[in-house]
Amino acid sequence: MLKIYHAPFSRSVRILWLAEEINLSYQLESFTLFTAAMQTPAFLKVHPQGKVPAIDDNGFVLWETSAIIEYLVARYSDGALLPERASQAGATAVQWMEFAENQLTVIMAEIVAHGGILPQERIIPALVERGNSLAPQLIQIVEQALDGKLYILGDRFSAADIMLGFGLNIATYLEFVSHATPNCQAYCTRLANRPAYMRANAA
Ligand SMILES: N[C@@H](CCC(=O)N[C@@H](CS)C(=O)NCC(=O)O)C(=O)O
Picture 1 (cartoon, rainbow, N blue to C red):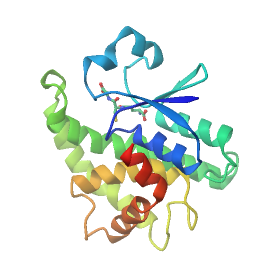
Picture 2 (picture 1 turned 120 degrees about the vertical axis):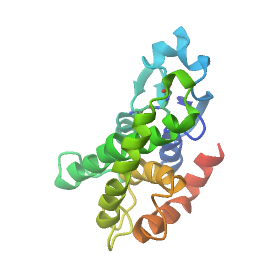
Picture 3 (picture 1 turned 180 degrees about the vertical axis):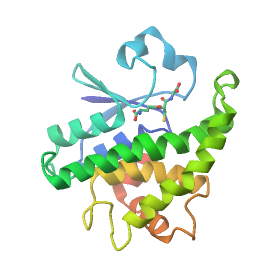
Picture 4 (picture 1 turned 90 degrees about the horizontal axis):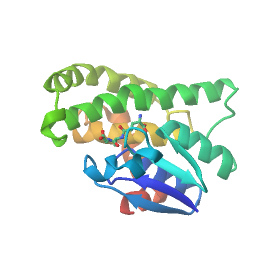
């Protein structure tokens, strides 16, 4: 069975959410973020940085959220959650998945982590300042992209929404998403009402 290396409230929630969307069975190996348990030799063999998410699919180990999502969609679903990669729609999906992780989530997570939850010796206060100055522009990009759309690729929910929704949830917690960004706010509510999202967050 698929094993998902997971920590509550972390990026690995995205993998649980995807698995729930495609009715894929999984077992969890759960950690508390930033603890020594994530830096053991055994776990570093799974993820060389000691991070989550990672998966072990009957001996095949994979890390990095986007790679895991693309793999699971391609291997274990009817493919409906991602357009054909070689198509223009597929390229747009990859664009939003990359933006969701490498721009939006990195910045939001840095604000939270370096704002206090990292162990003291890892905190870099300048990253909070940088994040706070970049965040409004990142949210505006999503706000405009969602104009007139239910989901980031159009009318249909996709894996790109899973990637983006996670980053926007942190942005909501940080109050960069608010009544002043109604498209993002309605989108987050739409995503949070999905049964698969609820099951993943309750796991
Ligand atoms: N780009 C990576 C980021 C992975 C990542 O930073 N995960 C965080 C949790 S959200 C983590 O495990 N942090 C532990 C640490 O930094 O020690 C991905 O999307 O998988």
